[in-house]
Amino acid sequence: MGRAPCCDKANVKKGPWSPEEDAKLKEFIEKYGTGGNWISLPQKAGLKRCGKSCRLRWLNYLRPNIKHGEFSDEEDRIIWSLYASIGSRWSIIASRLPGRTDNDIKNYWNTKLKKKIMGMAPSQRKAPHHQPSLPTHLPMAVSSPSQSLSSSSSSYQGSRSYYNPSESVVGLEPISIPSNLLSNCNTYTTTSTATATTSTLLQAQDGFMSPMHNYQVKEGLLMFGGEPSCSSSDGSCNQISYGKEMEYEYGGSGGGGGGVGNGEQMGLESFSYTDVFDNQKFMIGGNVYGGCGLDGWTPSQKPNDQMLVEPPLDYGLEEIKQLVSSNGCSNLWFDENKTQGRGMYY
DNA sequence: AATCCGCGCAACCGCACTAAC
DNA sequence: CGTTAGTGCGGTTGCGCGGAT
Image (cartoon, rainbow, N blue to C red; front, side):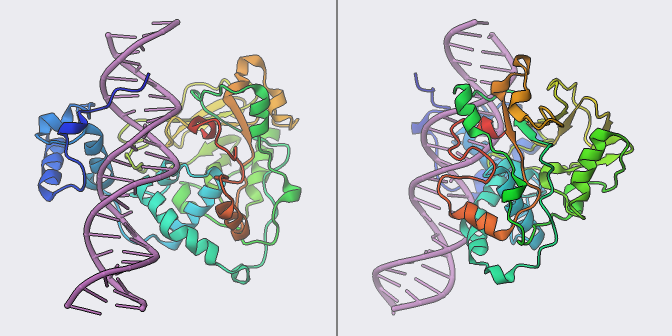
């Protein structure tokens, strides 16, 4: 059974928005808000538009603090590094770029940045100065609380992607993300084996802070820094407007606890973290030390809901070019066929 | 000056997900 | 617990504009 249309297609206007429509929508929302119901909003606002269209227009164009125009080099780096890390999860990428929408980033990537990267000659690269930084014994699981992996475990296994340092490209310029864009602090110390592991990981970065590892180990506590931002083509404002949350979980139990606030601290034994991503749950380690990854999950951990990946912390241009030029492979570290749907990447 | 062509961007489409009933 | 309406997201489309011919 197909889904019912969200609106009466015959009676709604399509195409570019007029200044009058923009003004109407803006005025209405500023006055009354969305009321949590986009479907009925156009009628209330006196617009002959689909609610979806209104939402899109508002979130991508009319809402305050939208940044348009040229992307900076720093933004470029963030985009391509995140793309290599998580693929075309534009909303997640956008969440790291304040004022940018995922539609903007998607367009920018497709029309400019991709070509820019592909056009970069290897000679432009700097000398290597890093080693693969994610320890082999620290698998990272990325899971979705709601992903529906209908496929069998073998399919799931097939989707696993382990980061193999021996195969990583050494000699390519790492893509550094300015930590001030990604994190609120950059200090850490270690007090435990677990933290030492993470710390090693971080120290190996030599100043690099992965977008996917936007946290610090501080006084035995793992800290995450997140930068509030809004995003999404349909414009989900990841943490501000919609209160969507992300959980990071640590430890094999997979349980975690309730989320904590952005930038708060938590013990390493078991924690979860609430951050800026939409319902993103990142789990560090099914078996942190054993490195057995998936095999470390117990049935209660919903293995079908877990996907183990080992996102690299930085990427060379060649890696990204490879990524860009390969067909159907959205990134280096995830299910190349996206067979599991979006949830696979969450 | 007219036409063609490529590019950039806004908007749409359809599917997945979620919460409410 | 199943159904359904609403929302979120990523991929795709198509229009407008500017440069080339």
